[in-house]
Each structure stands twice: as C-alpha cells, then as structure tokens.
Length: 459
Image (cartoon, rainbow, N blue to C red; front, side, top):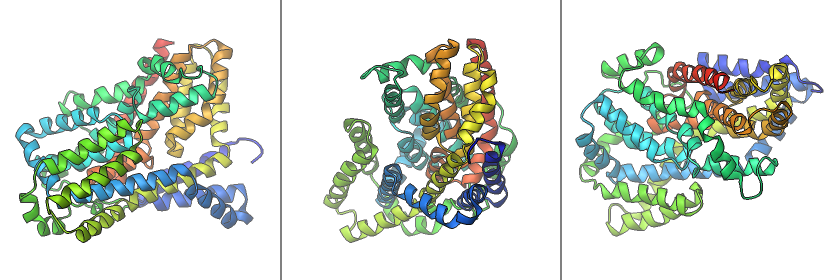
C-alpha cells in the first residue's frame, strides 16, 4: 500500500469477530492475515504468506519464545509429576483459608515475581490453580489476577525485562544518553498510569469493592456450581494442556501424596535467582535451572531418567497451542505493518496532538494499535520515532509521553485476545483463552478509561 488508509482496519476487525465467534484464536489470526494479504496483493497471497511466515519463524524473538515456553512446560511437568506442585498447594491451603485470601495470595505472588511477564504469567497460574480450585474460584478469575500482575507489574519495576528493552529503545532513538536509558525509564514510572490502575484494581475486585459483573460473574457462578473450568474445549488453547487433567491426576495421585515441598520451591527459586543473575534472561535462567533440577530429582530417585525425559517432552508439547497462537499473532502483526495500520492510526489522530492532549491521544492511539495487533513491544518500537519528535515539537512533557506509551503497551499486553501475555496467563491458569480474554476485558476497559482521564488531568 502506497498510503495509509482505513482499509488497514479490516483485518483486526475480522480477527476480533472470528476469535469471539469461533473461539479459535490461531485460526482467526491466520484468516485475518490472509484477508490482509488479499487487500495487499490478491495474486500473491500464497507467496507473501510463505515469505512472512518464514521470516517470523526465523526471528530470534520467536525462537526464544519457543524455547522458553516449551522448556517451562517441561519444568512444570516435572514439578507436577514429582508431587512438588501438589505439596505446594497443600501447604498454601494453610495460609489461604477462603476464596479471597487465595486470590490475594495469588496477587502477592504475582507482584513478587516481577522480573518478566512470561515467567510471571506461567509460574503464578500453575502454582495457584490447585489452591483456587479448592475454593471454587473460576479459572477466568485466576487468569485475570495473573494477567493483571504480569505486564503491569513488570512495567513498573526498573529491574524487569520490560525496563531493559524499553530503556534500550530510548537510547537507540536519542531520547536518553548512552547508559541513561533505565534512568529515563524510571522518570516515566509515575506516569505509567494504566499499569498502576490495573495493579491496584485487583485487590478491589478480589475484596468485592469493585463488584464482579458481566462475563466474569457468569464464570464465577459456574465455578460455584462446581465447574471451575469452562465447558467449551474447542479453543486452540484449552485446559487440556496442563497436568491437572483428571485422568493424569488419578494416575499420579500416589506420587503427589508423597510429594515434598522442596521439590517445588527449589526449582522455582533457582529459576528466579538464575534469571536475575543472568541479567534478566529467562532462557539462560531456565537452562541453568533444568541443568540442576534433573540431577536434583535423580539423586532422590524420584523417577528414572528415561521417565523424566518422557515427562519433559509431554510438558513441551503442552505449550504448543500457546506457542502457535503467538507465532500466528506475529504473522498477523507483520501483515498489519505492510498495510500501514500504525501510520493510519497515528495520522488519523495527529490533528489532536497538542501539548495538553498529546499524552491522552498517544495512549488511545497506541492502545488501539497494541490491542489490534497483539504486539506491545513492537508497537512501541514502531511508534517511538514518530511520537517523540512530535512531543518535542509541541512542547509536551517527555516522561509523561513515555508513560503514555508504556501505559498503552501494558494495556495491549493485557487486553488483547491474542497477545503473548494473555495467551500465557490463560495457559498457566489452565483456562480457555477466549473465555479469559472476554471475562477480563471489562476490567481492562475500566482501567483504560481511568487512565485516559488521568492523562488529561496531568497534562
């Protein structure tokens, strides 16, 4: 496309409609990408789709994500098979005496694991779902709490992967001096309003100060009736991925009863510690953790090495639906970029970009883009060279504008049906992906509305 146009909005609308109606996010994303390619060049759809998909699969980020998610699935399989996860749930029940305390415990754990949103989303959900199941809390509510303490918490902590990535972008684009990227990032933390609102909303929802309503209320009523997990299992990411499936639980019930708490805590603490040690690199943290966990279990003779390998392979396979969704989202994002969707949205809103309105307009524009494409980091990288010069031209406050950009990124990460954070929060909680996205959307929109008003007031 030579010029940005409203045609670029068609693929995101198609994806959102299909995701809700078909409840198959991977299929919806692929159809949306094909629709976009038809708009670009009807005669070269197959060639373009092939080129884009190969480019995405060759991307270092995708390779990293496949390794991280798959290896995390392998680790989870070991934690469950050895009975460590069961033992943690049993001990956690001594602290969590009811629905509210179990969700607050989930919240505290989510805040504590702040170094990476992937690590947060997968660890907290997998750790707490047995506890929340005990108190008939829906998996959707668990996934909402997990998702609200994944990207929003990581955004607010300058020691997270988000801070490292975005701080580097600020330096690369000349907004901060070399070595001062994290410092510039920290100046914007007070203005990352969406993240603050999303994090503080969770205890209000848990304690009933903000009532449960809409799809979340239906999910909670279903859970109270004895069905924690959504009935529909036709989504690309279903609850069948995790090891809480009844048949497997029955098979391993004896091992779980004999599970020791240290067989859960030691690997989890190693994972967090190694990730921090290796400069917030989750992949290196996982390699080191697996390298020590396997002999740690072997010395205890918990299972033969061959059985450990089988469990790890099954655990890796359990993450394939989540990996597939994120890969499809990356393909869809590339198609949207070729349709010039980011430029169209920015150009459409640029007449309203005055010094007073710029932060609020930037938040709305980037939030729409992040929600439509499922790309939080990518949208920031694309928009920062456009938005920041405009910010300087109209005399807007730089930390406030950076805060608006990061607020939009964290909104997109949490609210989008097919963003990596949403997918992994659903995966970790053992929840149907579309059910999770639909039930938490009203709460993310409330947080976004408060954020918009906040930016207008601050400017």
